Length: 271
Image (cartoon, rainbow, N blue to C red):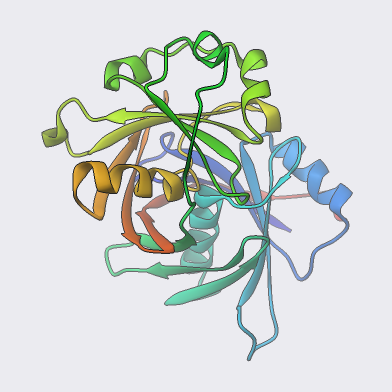
């Protein structure tokens, strides 16, 4: 079967966030899916198979890190939609049935793809004791997110503080169900982005994720009232870096980006 590696939320190879993508006839047992994701060894590998016509979704979709299955993933969904478009397996808007509900991906004429995801509600919380020491900077505020992503959004003083973080990844595990999203307003919005972030997920086997689409379903409602706009662009300031355009639509958040296929090969071990 074919396996592809796609760089998501970027318009060039070797940037953004790479994801494995496998299109299947059906889902084999979970152990095989986890073995493949461990072998691919990227932050997420997506597995999808077509559903019978006439239902509420067109494809079933699941995501696995090297260590576990996750409930929602943005960049691997973007990568899957890109593969469906470039291979001709689907056109227009594609509906995915996933653990977090029905997600859609709409391809535009310029090749960009817009994902329709549930907005992650935010709950202000007391900054956990020891978080600043584990993160490497003292937070300004902290917000818990929904069960779909299970992250802690941590506001820091400025962009340079976010960029300069050197966390103690082992210590971070104690502070969130899935991970920590560190964020700050852009120092200079004329550079093409409104806020920056970095995402740390050592609890699910990923010390730092290059570009985390699902995190932006929480970053959109966090920054929208602070910046006074519902249309924003976030820069995830990892070593690979990537841009996510967000549009806050109440209980839904639109995430727009582009993707590039960098590897197209054959998986020799069948389930």
